[in-house]
Image (cartoon, rainbow, N blue to C red):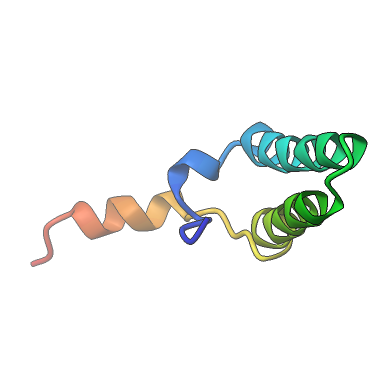
Length: 72
């Protein structure tokens, strides 16, 4: 998740799915009696929320096209 502004993460459903998978993993770990790994998974979910919803800034589409045009 170092490159949270990668184009793969642009659709909202993908970012939500990643957080949901981490939360689901945490539930499974707690349900099977492994609280250590449950806390690790909750940490992943928290970090994903921080990166994908709090800090996330989608890349500007117009900026990329301006960089590819030749300058005179």
